[in-house]
Image (tube, rainbow, N blue to C red; front, side):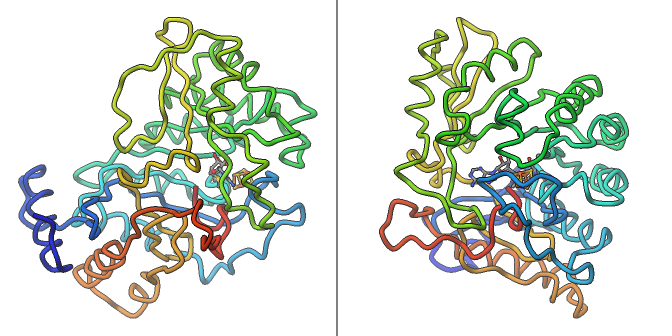
Length: 355
Ligand code: SAM
Ligand code: SF4
């Protein structure tokens, strides 16, 4: 039976999570379409040291003032509530660039000390990861996804507006050495920049044991320059890859994992293609996002947010915060609606939401 009110939903969700944990003091992040969010993306900062064209303008953005950014203690408290009361079991640290967050190693250690212990992953551009990968791994970080769109220095500089390819490559090597595995590489293809480099990037990743996933560019850039006609579709990407490799679907059900996976030249190596725009996976979405200033977003493309920072700072208890969080999730829309003519790009760009 589909629950008809938030209260019914929370009760149903509590039973759902209870079944998994054996604990009595739990609810879940359920929405009115029956989805349960268990994967929390936490943005640790909106700042970044790259300026990827599909994300940020060359001049950067107006960064959040420090006093509006959640402190380490506030981040850990919200993650604890999510893990212990709301059924979250995977925490992904992101940004902006999460490696720019001071105290990152300590934050990871505190999240890893929670019980039940969540899986902890990080999405990063890897600048500086060469220095911190081992400490992060020792603190409890399980895996990283490194964003890398090209292995050509000139294309890298064009797309990110910084000459830092060598640092990313060093960061990837350090991640593998520190066993932050499987090391995944996330790439976005942009027309006129790197759309012809998918095969080259895949070969480079295969040689090093990294798992490549190519993601369709979404309308989340601060400059609002995204254009559906210009976008490199997953179908086009696959066509290009198939000209160089033999790809066979792994046959794994996509579920809430957005990548469609293919064995490359018979396997065991795989490549993933994420068709966020042309074949959205909203119906199976299990994600919820917390911005660096403490706003819950139930979707990347949400136009409403719920202010947990205000609740925290006005003395709300854990129960009250958990309830607000559940209410925020209940209103999640069924899909992102990018193809709907009435689609409105969210006010916050990707870097300020947490990708
Ligand atoms: N700075 C880190 C990084 O780049 O990995 C973490 C934050 S970044 C916003 C997270 C991911 O979002 C990256 O993999 C990036 O490629 C992706 N991203 C940013 N803007 C995007 C867009 N408009 N469409 C699709 N993916 C985007
Ligand atoms: Fe920075 Fe990541 Fe955005 Fe690139 S995609 S500008 S690395 S936040």
